[in-house]
Amino acid sequence: MLCSLRLAPQKAQISLRWKDFGSTKCWGEIGMIVRITNVTQRRSFSGRNGTVRGTSYIPMLQEMPTAEQTEAAEDRIRMANRKSPMAAAGALETVKYFLTALLLAISKAGLSLAGDSWAIGTTTYTDAKATFYGGPDAYGTMYGACGYSNPFALGYGAQTTALSTPLFNQGLTCGACFEIRCKISASAYAKQWCYASNPSIIITATNLCPPGSYGGWCDPPKPHFDLAYAAFTRLANQAAGVIPIEYRRTFCRKSGGIKFTMNGNPYWNLVLVHNVADRGNVHWMQIKGSRTGFMGMRQNWGQNWESYSQLLGQDITFTVTLGNGRTVTFWNAVGSKWWFGQTWQSSYNF
Image (cartoon, rainbow, N blue to C red; front, side):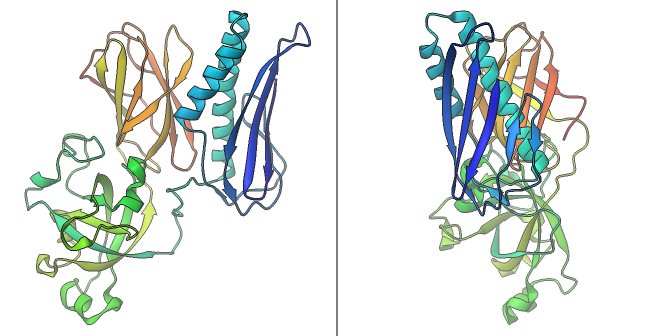
């Protein structure tokens, strides 16, 4: 098996070739385009364990293979191997191992994905505006666009925010944590309403502030935070209505293991992933039954991921990839006696 990632400015071609080692026949090949920026040198990835050759690096990877690309690649392999089921099955597993290895290698290289390019641990803040929604009881913040339904029951509490469309990134920023504070130096208005102590708070993205909302604050391309009332009033007097802020990404601190809530029906699995540490926001998932190989999942909405597979009665393993490419496999996170509506917690997290 040969796995390589060939890089050139503004474009990278991922090529995967495999052979039946008992002969010279090549069973097939796939190609997926990954757009990148500011490539400094070449870097190659090889082997199932994501070995990285060379010492160069890529400052930012803008796009990873999506679930749709993975599925399309698998369909092409099936068509190319109609007459050789055994080879086709082996090829599919090779693709899955390759993609997992690639993600692991990218994670080790410290790359970031599109829509998730905020640098954690830096001192750089970005300007934005903040409003609030819901009341003191935070009831109005439930049942948001991230799919968390009741964020209080899931442990997110009232320190949450809805994001404008550019930050929401089609739900791929759901679960991410931000450090925000008033930008008191922005204006006399900010000095009037923001607290003089200028505290910073950590909030979690749990909802979308859609375009056309009152005041137009959430209209693209504006970066905007529509905070839960309890979060807003830690920064400023509620009478302010809207305040200038500074924000940056930060790590999500979670207690216990990552959680998976199983929904759907016997032929379709809809999995809500939550209590995610580290970056907090999931960009890709794979699912595996105890009698199947790994299968790519599609993002349905928010942090709900779907798979058309029959897995009842099987232990279920998930591979979860965060927005920065970091990937962890949660082996047998869901026991074989699982049922729809249940939430299962892994013994570990990111």
